[in-house]
Image 1 (cartoon, rainbow, N blue to C red):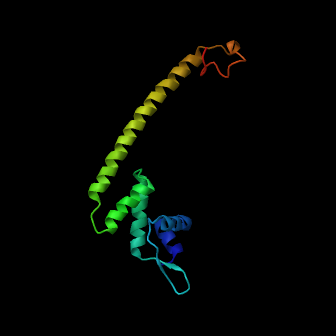
Image 2: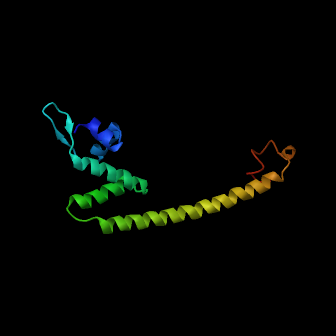
Image 3: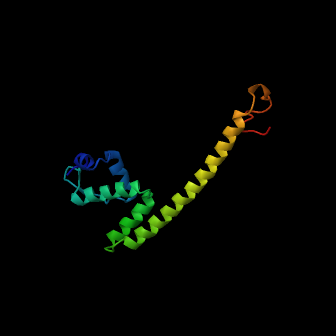
Length: 132
């Protein structure tokens, strides 16, 4: 199938398919005598895998690593589990940071509600965030 058909089958823009080829995520396809890219069914499953892996929060470099293990003929399960554990830990850390940020924003909101705009000094930017 040609690149337009692959794009339609997978919902992946043509430009993205070319980008994936350039980055080595999608192997270069066979070319017709006229120079058109010609893809097989494996390209569909590979692009669907990439989309699912991105949906799980994996970066393209991580996805490329999983694909490299598979391309060597090995099952990438252990590698994938290690990446997902790392991703989960990263998410947990971000959640902690967001909770701390939420508390800080709540404190600033409480502070702001009690302030009188007339007391705002022209030397400062905003008394809610800046020092009193």
